[in-house]
Every structure is written in C-alpha cells, then in structure tokens.
Length: 204
Image (cartoon, rainbow, N blue to C red; front, side):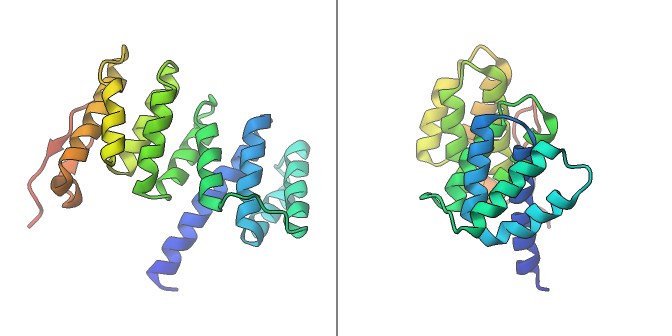
C-alpha cells in the first residue's frame, strides 16, 4: 500500500471515529448531524458501523442507533449535502459537549478536512464568542490546522478584545499567521498553546 492510500485511510478512520463517537452520546441534534454525515459517506461507513455494533462494550441504545444507520444506508438514503459539509456540521456540534474524548476526536477529524476548514471554525468562534470555553476550543483547533483566509483574518478582529485573554491570544496568533504566509508555509512558525508565535531558523 502506498503512502497516499495509507494517508487516505487514516483520514477516513479519524473522521469516522469522531462521527461514531458522536452517536455514543445521547444528544438529539448531535446524533442527527452525525447520522447525516454517516449517510453521506454511505457504503464506506458500513464496515466501521458493524465493527462497533458487534463490540460487546457498545451500549444497547448506542448499538440500536448504529443499526438504524446501517439500515438507512442499505435503503440508499442520502442527505442533500456532501460528506464534508455534513461532517463539518457534526464536528462543530461536538465541541460544546463537555466530554474530552469526543472533543479530541472532533479536533483530530476537523484537522483531516484541511486548511479550508479554518475559516469555518473562526466563524463559529465569532458567533459563539459569549460561550468562552466553546469559542476557545474552536480557535485552538483552527490554530492546529493552518491559517485563515482574508475573510477569516477580518473576522478575528472582533475577538482581539475578548474578556478572556486566551481567546485574545489565539485570535492574535491566527491573524499573525494569516499575514506571514511565507513563514508559515516554510515551516518557520512554531505555535505553542498559551504563548506567542515564534519564528525559528529554517533547518539546513
């Protein structure tokens, strides 16, 4: 198996892990969005769904939700949105939940969607700036993924004066990264949570 196929499989596994774990928690809006994303993935999700269904550690209510999705995939039910759009909506629904496991899985899955998802995270952070913990989690994931576009850069401005200093720092670092494209693309930017970005010398 070549590196491209291995990377694709890791990406798929990370996305499915977050969606399947979202079905573990009994939360109507979250379950619906995870379900839609799994339906959008379709047949490619069935093997993973069946593995979890057959796992003895899966709770009966969780198992039933998974069986329902398998049945709907079998009936060729598909949402109007594509898998990326549905997955993005599901991961955003996972961040407000006070569950470290699902937060980490959602963050890892979001990272698989690439830099294009950075602006979506920033928009969500701005819209939820009154929910400080949620806002900070969204910006932290955005920082892990990449840099904002011009639109994302401008949106960050309203977070620079947030009452929570961690959010101000995250917004400032993301803006700095957006205006220092060459340093970021060359790997000379090192981001440390809670600290300012520093520029390092390129490796020989």
